[in-house]
Structures are given as C-alpha cells and as structure tokens.
Length: 385
Image 1 (cartoon, rainbow, N blue to C red):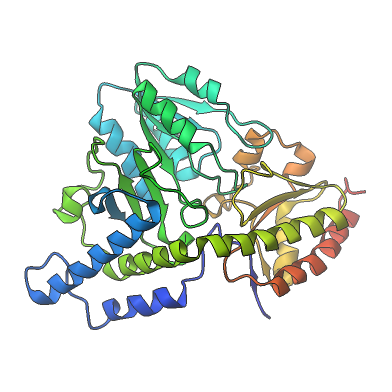
Image 2: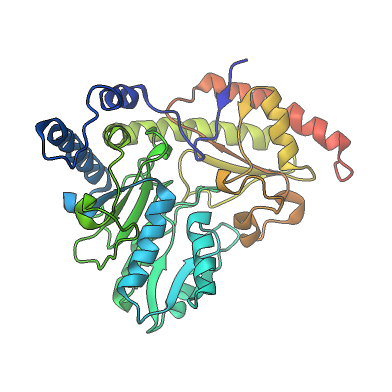
C-alpha cells in the first residue's frame, strides 16, 4: 500500500541530493575534521562549507555565528542554559504557553532550580499579546524565548516586533525556528534576534543534526562542555556526514523556498477548502493568514483524533494529532488548550503537514477518503450527530 505522508512537521524524507552528498563521509572520507593530518583536514573544509550554507539560509552575518548541534532540542537547551549561565545575576525567563517541549519542559525544570518563568497566553488564533509581553519584562529578565512558528498549528509569531521589544528592554532574545527555517524566508541581518535554533530533519536533512545561530556580541556560555570543537562553544566530534547533509538541505531550501512554498500552500489550501466544504462541524485551528504554508491543523467535532488517525493509517495516510514529541500523552494538546479550543473540538484535532514531495494526486486521495472516515466515526460516537 502506498503511503501518503503528510506528517512533515514531525520529520521529513531525506532529499536524494542530501543523501548523495553524505555518502562519501560515511565511507571513504571518514577523517576527524579536528585532526592535523591532511586526511582529516580536508573533511574540515566540508564542514565549513556546510556552515556557509546554513549561514546563507538564515541570513547570518558571519560563519562564526553558526554552531552545529545534534538536534533542535539541543539548540534550544544550549541557547537558554547558555544565556542563563552568562547572566547568573538574572533569574527570570519569558516564554509562551505554546512552545515545543524542548523549551516548555526545560523552563518547567528551571523553575525547580529557582528560576521564575512567565508563560505568555495566546488568543483563539494562537497569537500572543505584545502588551502582555512588555508588561512581563522586568529588571530580572535574562531571556525571552518565543518560537518563530508553532509546530502544531503553524502560527507564525511577530518575531521582529518581539525581538525589538527584547532589545529595547535589555533582554536576550531566542527563537526556536525549527519549523520556520526553510519554510518562510527571513534574514538574521535584518532581524534583531540574538539566538536562533534549527533542526536538520525538518528540512530534508537527516535526524541527529541541528544548528544554533548566536549573533556576534551575544554572551554565550557552552552548554556541552568538552573539546575545542566549534571554537570551544560545543564540545564533541562533529557529525560530519549529517552536517554536510544539513548544508545541502539548506542550499536546496534557499534555492527553492519561494516556488516550493507557493506550490505547497496551494495544495494545503485545496485540502482545507475541500474538507471544510464536505465535512460538517470542522474548523481550522490557528491564524488563517500568519501561518506556515505547509501546515493544516483541523478539528472535527464529537470524535477522537486518535481514532481518525488510525482510520487514516488503514488507508495509508500518515498524519498526526500534533507534536511527535508529545505522542503517547493522553492529555489534549497544550497548544489547542491554550487557544481555548472548545472541548468538543479539541479531542478531534489532527494535523496535516506537507512538504515539497507531496503531490496533488495525494491531496485528492485524502480529500476522497477523509469524509467517509469522519462520517463513520461520528455514527459510532455517543456525541456524534
């Protein structure tokens, strides 16, 4: 059975170009890039070439701003803990109620270590109130960490405005851009962001590689202490093959971002429009304009999202109920709860997240199959109509 994969906010297929670029570094070019000999030194140049590609995608002003990590979670942890260690006299963090677990759970852990955390609310469209942000900052605020785009709803936050507020109030600003990088264009040279996290496997690079951009002049204390790699800012032998893959993935994203996003958005909008037209009591979650072009979070009243996913899986459609990092939890999405989505809808929420590899034929297949799935589940639901 063919699989229609529409769970790309969880992870993406490794691009063929990325895989081909990685292969030599898993076989004949296995030298340690920190070695003094030529065999390893040549590999170091490929690591630096990948660093240039990452910097180009993000619009960083210097190669020295890019630190390779193992994943988005490590990048987020390094940004937050590295900042707090740099400002030990400050004990306050500002974030939102809808962050990814990599930030949210870390902040909750830091509260047990004596830090004070303000969790900003979101409205029914998933947007924060900038006045609430301004009111939350005080002399003790070390860091503001707000995601660029939400992984469940795709809602894009006003990062430029948030970063300006942080700068004016003297707080360091970090954004988790794991879902935004490669999907919407931005230039860090034009954004007053101090630290920015990305992950390779969200943009068709392999799992196990990420990057943290630290703007020049930003105080940063290493989170992972070890050797002198990454100019002493992240110990550990570089994951060369994956770093090379990340570099190629960034090149592809930068080259194709405009055309791809227009095509993916057209497919997403076709899917949404058809579902809303054919399935009663369904609603889109998240701001309709300020949203990633690939993401559709949709609720179906009176039924369970898990049941929908199981039925879709039987038809070869791989979607999700939200973040893969919170799968297994029986509690409703913390993002949708924060948005005040009614209980009768929140349980029946699923996420379709598309990529460059999805086709119109696949979207048509979902449009054909989904209405009967919803109808069947409502017929056996004690609350269905």
